[in-house]
Picture 1: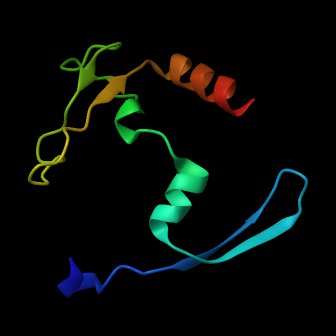
Picture 2 (picture 1 turned 180 degrees about the horizontal axis):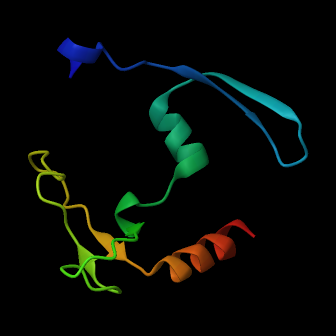
Length: 96
């Protein structure tokens, strides 16, 4: 990847507007510091939610996608297949 895209940044600036429309900027933060301060948690505790209404993927089950988890030593990526109405309900619940 480095040959194609270059070295990952050692630090970056992050700009955002909060819910009260106040502008903020965090300058020169390192990627892991950003993750620990603003993300945190174990990423393995999360699941990808999809809507794939196909005969080979019944709803309310998890699935992998061939060739998606192609990193040696990486964790398999699982997707929970939900009907669109449940996906919309879930999105509404999490975003208020």
